[in-house]
Length: 371
Image (cartoon, rainbow, N blue to C red; front, side, top):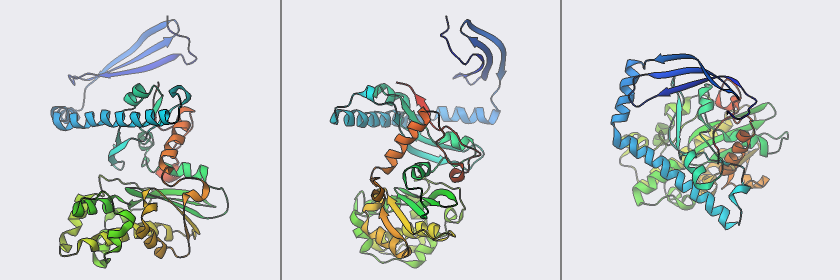
């Protein structure tokens, strides 16, 4: 006996097996009385795609490594959830859902079959926590011809005052993104590297994970020719909507750009990278027709004193403040945003802003893994 349901009727089923001999497609009529096969079809894989799939399957080391990492990330995420519950004496059944962004390993939304890949299995998080988990927030927007990122601007619009002030919200994580809110609407996109290149370079030079307070950068001098070279990258010339990731702006990208500048001091390179982050953010704010009198900073970049000083020099007519001014701790902004996006998904509300991502419409974002 099938369980009672309000949505009865025709459903499509798809199955493709490990033999790659084709795709089984069926249409069934399903209702409380049972299931009836109505139509069936076998579709062959396109020859070039079948070959590509076989090659991916055959490269077991790299594929297995990614799949194992997916599960290991999930275990760490789940452990963090369980620990915060234990620390605060909260039972798992008190939590409606977990919204998990996951760890991005690839982001390429601009091709005909664009994609974004975040690892951290939602299935395993739900299994290890006993809490409904929502992951994969980007790909529904990408399927609707959007960038899939940034998604935080919708949260920014919801939590910051709806007043007449022109306000920019800048998140400086590994990649920096900006949300621009004014009386005419909202826009937002990734401006380019945030902390990622700074972290990569100091680790390459001194084995440190980050430049505390920006002291290493502050000890050097900006090389204007190198800065010009870095800013000549095609990404900075693109118009919004646009998004990028650390799979693009990373140490390999930097080393290619440094080839004509091998004689530069390490500290001067770090100073130039800090200037690149500040300049690429400020360029996006100042090229707008509106004057943004308030620029709110969140993310790890808020703790980089040198970087903030550089940003202030580019935006002398704007108040540079922490998002904490409005009660949103800059260190937890992004995590709060994905808790909020999880809430929207579980309630059937859209999570994207088409005016930000370029999608053709509002979409409910995220895959739900029930407890």
